[in-house]
Image 1 (cartoon, one colour):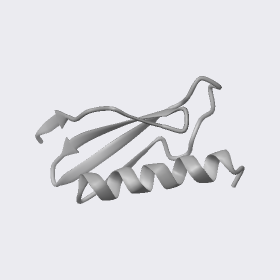
Image 2 (cartoon, rainbow, N blue to C red):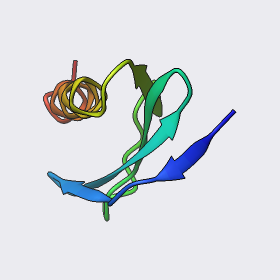
Image 3 (tube, rainbow, N blue to C red):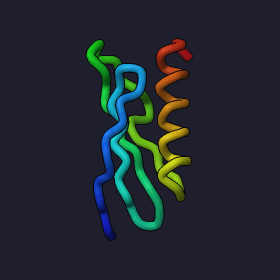
Length: 66
């Protein structure tokens, strides 16, 4: 299994870390300065862009209290 880290992305106080994870991508979601936690704390998808979009949607829902 090949893993290669990509550049971290800051999004609304969270850090999203995309990692190439055969057969696609995984994005780990790290809490922001307010120590908020998300569930799930990572997402997987076939493309990096799709994984990041899903992670951003999870952060958005979490910040809206859903």
